[in-house]
Image (tube, rainbow, N blue to C red; front, side):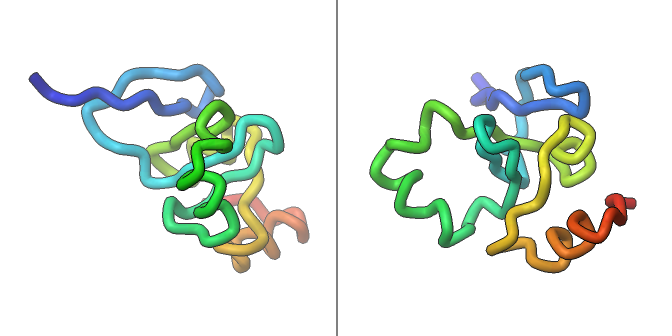
Length: 88
């Protein structure tokens, strides 16, 4: 049986997928970033982040769901977001 993953779609609604998310996010702060982001790594490892962690298939899904890029691991996307430039 294939393992299923819960991802957040562009409408902000969770859905089941056979593929892992490419990006992770914080549903409280509405920030998304790379799965290997060192700014959240320690929180993921000690389990304190688990309840508020969400996943996205794409950057466009994260943006459409109302999340902004992480200023640490996605600096260029963060700069563009801050300047008001959208994701293509």
